[in-house]
Amino acid sequence: MVNFMELLQLQYFLTVARLEHVTEAARHLHVTQSSLSKTIQRLEEDLGVPLFDRVGRKLRLNESGSRFLLRAERALFELDQGKQELNDLSSSEQGTIELAVNTASMLPNILREFRKKKPNIQFHVQMLTTREMVAHLHRGDIDFCLSSPSLIGEDIECQILYRDPILVAVPQSHRLAGRSSVSLSELKEEWFVGVKKGYGTRDLVDSICKEAGFEPKFVYEGDEPARINALVEAEIGIAFIPGTATNQNGQIAYLQVEKNELVREIALLWHKSRYVSRAAQSFREVVVDYFEKLSKGNN
Image (tube, rainbow, N blue to C red; front, side, top):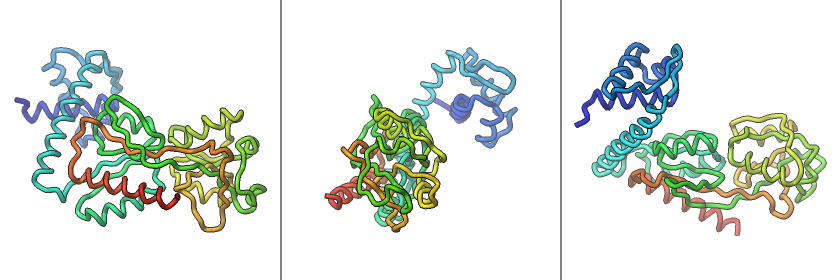
């Protein structure tokens, strides 16, 4: 039988293993560094092997630590799933949905619809890069990812929800503002604003533009997609904007990319082994219904 201290040791170990820094791990766990170090030391003594190579306060997982990390993550994951399942049996109208997104333009509408349907269920949303999202999915510590692009993996379920054309946004004063469409080759000398590399839409744009023979030149790269329209409107640069993120206020012109070269897939992702609570099932229904209505409205 695993006692409380052994569970605490595992939780502390996971945090130190992910951060590989005693000071940062102690701050994250709200414990003293000495207490954290002693707990990790007791765990190593119980296991009979060191789990880290130490250089001052900096730690590096050694081979034993890397192997044990996989087992510890799996053990705590299963315990967390059991807790969620028991909570689900006691009440279907409580709990928190853990959500990660790398595309957020339609998120306010989705969350508003979900809150109407399940007002007592809370949600916690993280904006992540595609790489960060994959890491969270593999660890099984989130319910769903709303992602573009769609992702494939042994332990990942993927439901494609929507095919979203990516448009070229230009200020009304721009030379292209009177056009309805533009070819990628015409944009080679333009300056762009957009999100950083690592976000799905940016990576897709970079890939397609490379095939067209150029690399977009960026004067602004950020991690807040909602700000991009404002930067275009301020004439800082032009941008590639998903159709679901356009701002129809008359200050920006949106052009189709000729030959439909730029289209992104929006998908809902989840861990195959993660327990899907009734609250999570309700959230998935809201998301699927939202994109079905969006698709019908555009046909």
